[in-house]
Image (cartoon, rainbow, N blue to C red; front, side, top):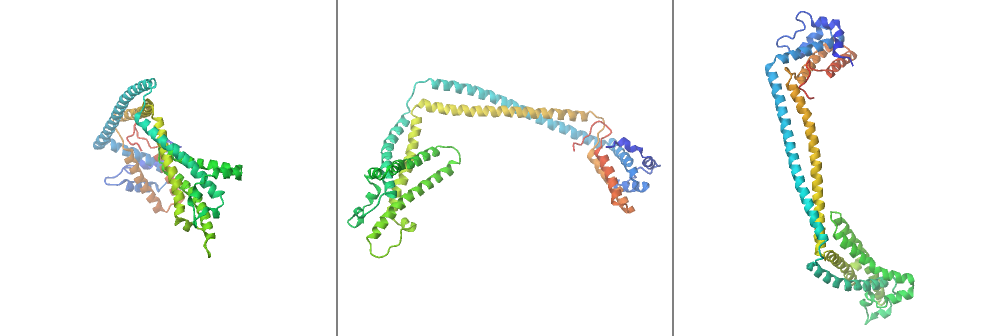
Length: 416
């Protein structure tokens, strides 16, 4: 890229700009008009554009140097900028000081919590009476509930998948519902039917106990995801129970149909929804293991809290983790603030250096007037009917000069 000094090589441009009074901007003449007039002196010769721009540039700089109001305005802008930077630096240093004080407080609190935790770990076991009562009651409830589940689901499973209902199940013209739900011979009959049937019946109750167990564990989880998983689990469990109930009710319906005269429609979902037996079987199973799951959750929580010291230790450990997180957050905040202060210091020095210069220039205004000058130059080129290529050549020369713009002193007051 050529430097502006190299643009001085055009003797034609220098001659035009040095003609007696021709190059001087007239009173009341805008830079657009000025550019149009100077272009006319050279007939739009592109070789004269660079030195003309350079001469105009230095002329604008001299105008600004003689403008006391502009110099005072730029001086005040620098002073205001320095004051803002110093205020920002002061605020960040105050934040650093506050953060360091908070770190000291958190460190002391962390030490005290760790000492308290150490004492609790060596303390004698102390029974939590409330947790003990909950543990006893939930244990008493869980034992018969578990036996009930085993009997109910082994019987229901056998009736739904293996048992064949016959005339012997009918008493007084009505089907005996209890024989479909509670079959005292379900395990013995499954044994007679085969090993696979026996295993199926024995392990089926554990499927529903697992539903209750998982429900109790998910209920204790933290976060929004449990509100999605728990309803999904309940829907799946309800669907499983509904299938078992439907199978049994269908067998009962088919057996009753054999005793009726005339044609009876096959058992369907709509009939099941209106069938009391269908809902009785679901209630005996589905709602029972929901309750079992919640009781099991109480039992587990009570077991964990039997030792009062253990509960205190758990709360203390949670508080220590929380304090540790706060302490680390404050340390990171301090590092960030120190980095920001380090970034402000050179900016303040830069502003101070600019303030030490005797004269200042508004580069933004200089560029604006140079653009106006070149716009006038381009207007003259259009009036002469210059080609697009010749206009582009002039534009390239102008852009090259603008990219090299530096004030004739060390510092610029424009940041853009």
